[in-house]
Length: 140
Image (cartoon, rainbow, N blue to C red; front, side, top):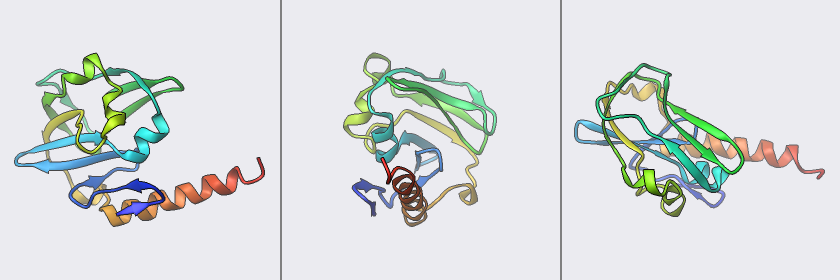
């Protein structure tokens, strides 16, 4: 599905903080949406957790720095980190090249689907945000 020029594949779920979540067996892959990476532009640094770290619900899992800001990713469930994408240590900007095929971390946890949006819900949510931003900056 798409909103504007941004893709939201239907094979994953979404959070309101520009994060995608994809179940992969007993693991959950975590990445940044196409819209999120577009807003971030160039990612210059990333802080990933260590394998084995237990991250409490709503605590920060990943922090990344762009040329404009520092952002944090948190999850609405407790999780244990089972793998990290080591390629991101050397080149965090690869997320921008293919955000849906480059995950940040894989975790295990009890992910409640009620905390997540389907692709359809995500498109509606982000569509409203984009419309508000356009309205906000219409006079500039």
